[in-house]
Image (cartoon, rainbow, N blue to C red; front, side):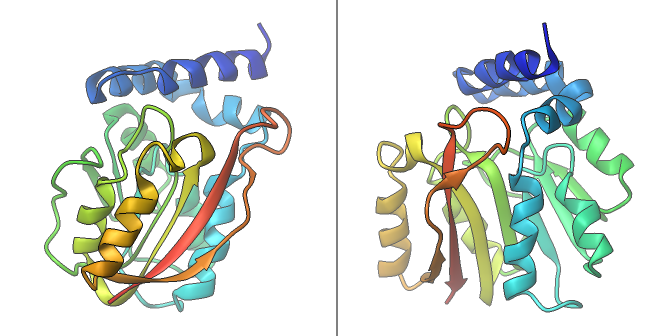
Length: 212
């Protein structure tokens, strides 16, 4: 089986995980080969989100949260650009161990989006998240906690997969947070591919909100 075929099979296992425990188990099985196999597909999102971070967060402002950081692919890119106060959360301890080995995160926590998060109100300057709001992963309601722990005037930057955007209730959560005066929309990208090489039908949209 080729590297890209192995990655496709692993993707299927995480997309079809029915519980957070099953998802954590799927990522535990994938952790050791995740970086190489997703690279074979041309996975863009952990690197592309850095562009939105640099657009909205000046260097020296923080802390920043990589929500659903996985193996921490975004961390070294941000560190190279001068962002030093970076935290990460993920439900997989195996993924977090790899993220920690990169030397880019000063705070790594094991937690699942959709449940309570271990930081106080307004703790972060911004959060960013890619590849997390997708099939079988974090629910749209996970945004409420992420907004809670982000300071007013800060930013939320994240991608949502096309297959869950409508049926997963993301637009309803967006609208509810706006009605509550918690955030306001800043930017919404067109739909674009997650992978440069394979999986051409896998598309996401990026969203940026300012916390109010």
